[in-house]
Image 1: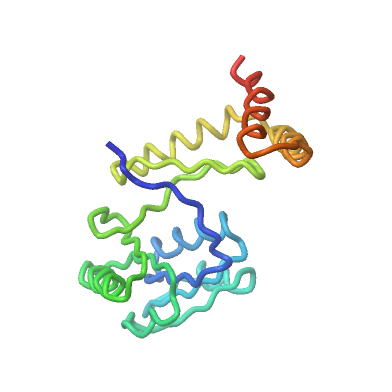
Image 2: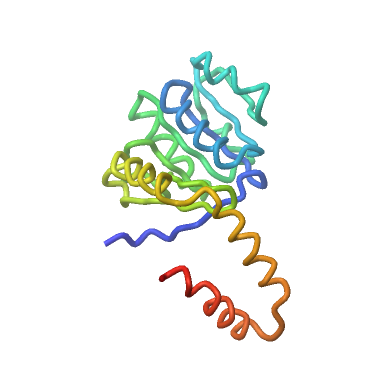
Length: 188
């Protein structure tokens, strides 16, 4: 049973650290900036791929080309690590636990406080998919299916529903009831 609590973070209001400058670090950065283009991210690694360096002019990304140490956690709210060293990854996790910072260790579910989900984005609609860390590949394939079947003009529907929501009078319960009536046609 998947007991994860789904949440969407406003990364532009948090400080994020990525530990690892290889393929996994690049993958994490791409996921972060695809979903939160204005996120503030620091990446630390002794070696940093050129593709990562190329992201600096386009994002709020700081690169620190050195080995990870606990001082890099100063001021961080959330951390993801994916180095080639299990020892470094474990140290990042232990340091984050000691400082009460949420941490994700790539491909090591038992060391994670959270998982990075596969995400479907259709303008304002965002759907996160989790397999509880069991199969990121399945989550990716399912994302691709959802991207195909969700109509492109969904944004118009969302905008119309927001207009209606803003015009509704009454308490919260009556607003929910009216919106439920309106959106019931989507089941047909």
